[in-house]
Length: 520
Image (tube, rainbow, N blue to C red; front, side, top):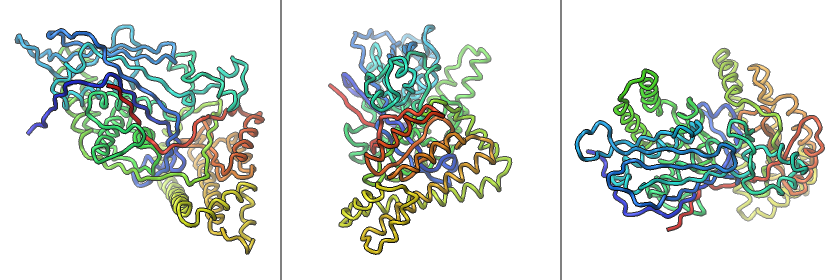
């Protein structure tokens, strides 16, 4: 029995959906394996996608609509696609509404993430809405904007004669121009493709009423939970197909639900979609004239896969109060796919060696997760005052000296200081393991240049821990500090660092995932 398709009378005049960037604090590389989890923190840097309907009279016989997408931060930031709703296999006088076919106009630059997000979204909308063609009408206009922290601003700061500091960044306009094409821009590692893909997909499904999204929080009710599940599944599917491989998915997960503890989905969930994609691509390369059946099969598989129950796990998590996450853009850059492939090649070549190291890292990760959760509990109870005293005390000296604070018998917040000292020591162990993995695999996860900078950061009072996020490399570093004074001292260190250019990012940690705003 087929699912009943809905009929809507109207859509919103305008829909804006935003999706956050991410930082993977623990679980780098390990999150590729379902046995392991990672702590992923959403940031307040966001992608913003706004949809407006083109309000023109739609001819009853017109079965082609238009999608215009503009991203004014790029020099080639305009894409135009045609949506064909007519089924070309139908030869009678009645227009049979088939699977939507989206094709780029001849002048549109290739953008696999955008095109896949659009196509797969309309596959789902087609299955959900009986009158989709009428709702789309002449078409839609989409504007996609990214907060400045997604892209390196070093070149623009230099061009304008501004300092490579937070103060300099604050003088740049909102949604600053990248002065280049998408291919030319240097990213900061916040997960721009995942945030863009997710915001585009969520804006389309929200605009046509298929999902419910909150304006201020991620989930309000059971219907919102179901909405987030289909959005997560669809965004993961589109993102994996667009990049041509099945990644861990923590970046998409953060874009959808915000900060959490993440366990990946089983990769084989996407096998039917990838088989259908390959079959359709093969028909195009063989110049087959009628690929409509394969297009229909792909649409069917996408809908079937994204509407089933996935086995990903997102457990609520937050940084304890008083802990501030700082990010530094290192003007060097890494090829993340190459780093990952190098590590996976080592894992395949030396499975026992890799397994032993990964299990050790996982044990350290879980210990940090447990202590952070304990601190969150302590900070919200009657011990909140003692918690804040411990934070303030540890902010006055370096983490390496915190053990001396424990020697004071009069310290009534001893357990909290002990937990902070333990977190710092555990993460130093993790850094040692990552350096070991770098040496064994040949992948520069924590390169020597980064090690020197991170060690210098740890010499600053109030720095709890610091490292290379996610896959590591030269892209970025992070620090977690316990006071504004500590933050200012870290900024001063980065400004004075001469071996590499380190520019602080302005974004901060955030709990929220997708947000939506609609006007009617």
